[in-house]
Image 1 (cartoon, rainbow, N blue to C red):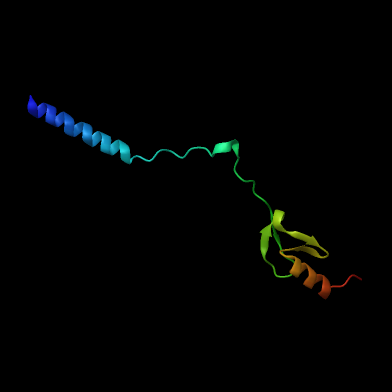
Image 2: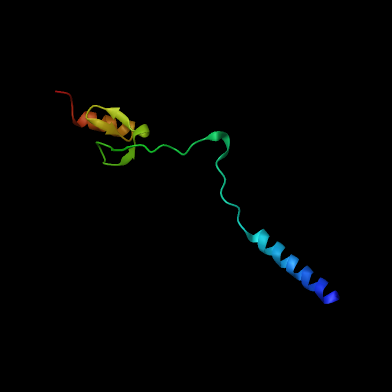
Length: 80
């Protein structure tokens, strides 16, 4: 009888050890936020860098990655 109890204790310990190693499935992000929406990628007219539409700066002759590139491009290509 004592061996049966010993085997039962070993089985329970092994079962608990195995259950604690399991990784829970990933949960949904809190706060109800949704996955970020994909944005179109645009190319800077000065240097060719690709950047998301939301970060692009519009200018004469296209879109730009920074104010400096927009100024350089507009200086090199004056209006007609």
